[in-house]
Image (tube, rainbow, N blue to C red; front, side, top):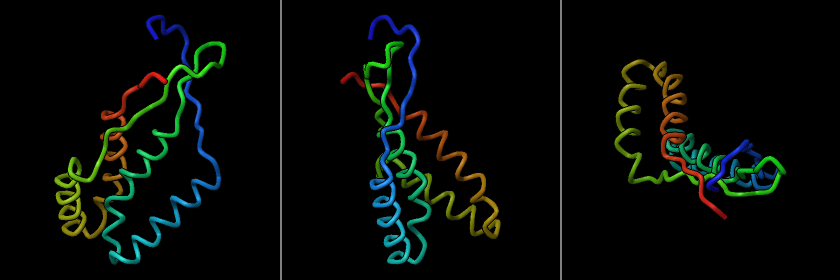
Length: 113
């Protein structure tokens, strides 16, 4: 990947894997009485980014995105945003989604196949 030229991104997500991911998180949300909703956005964006290919100008796959987000690395952020969401009666959650995406993108790199 020395000569980057014009690169594009392509999502490799299938409908089946998206449905499976959604069902898993619905179950986790029910089991945790909604607390999984604070973890879900991180794993949703990691799931999407992790299923994204990097293509060169001839549409040949030259790499993929790898999002290095896991529970230990985000637990501090989650606790802060849970407290803010409670204090603001839920309004902070609207800003939380944007901060999560920013965090995930900042922890994503292109890896060679």
